[in-house]
Structures are given as C-alpha cells and as structure tokens.
Length: 96
Image (cartoon, rainbow, N blue to C red):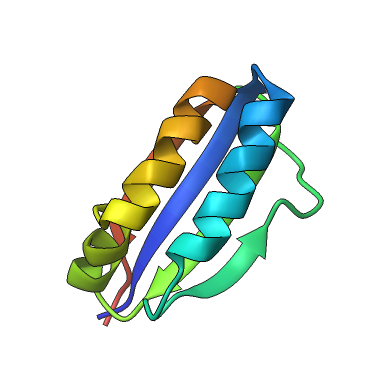
C-alpha cells in the first residue's frame, strides 16, 4: 500500500543551510520511487499551529519511504535541514 512522507516546516532558522539542503535533497532522490504530491504550495492552516510550508511525498510502500529517508544521501542532506529549519516529519500509510 502507498505510504506518504509529510514534511511540515515550522520555522526557518538559516536560509543558507536550507539552500544547501534543497540541493542535496534533490540529489538524494536518486532512483528512489518518489512522487511529489505537494511541494511548498499555497497553504492555509485550518487547525493547529501555523506552518511555513508543507511537502507530501508518495512512495509505493513504507519500506520504500524508509529506504529513501535513511539512505546515506538523504541523511547527508538532512543534516543541513536540521540546521536550517524546525520541521516535523511524518510517515503515514495510505488506505487499501
């Protein structure tokens, strides 16, 4: 069943680190089966705390999502994201 990685950016801390993250995260895609469904588009908060941005990535299943997330290339990119902004990152399974 499809799985989704949801990135919720709460606060940018360092724009230069985020630029490095964007470059490295793009390179980390590699051959991973990622389908972007939402990528920092227009955002309206209906409940809860405001967010600066949201990304939703679709994968064939949770194992594929974890394969990408825990890959050495993405972990290298992630180091810059952690310095550049406060995020929440969720992995959720779709429905059959």
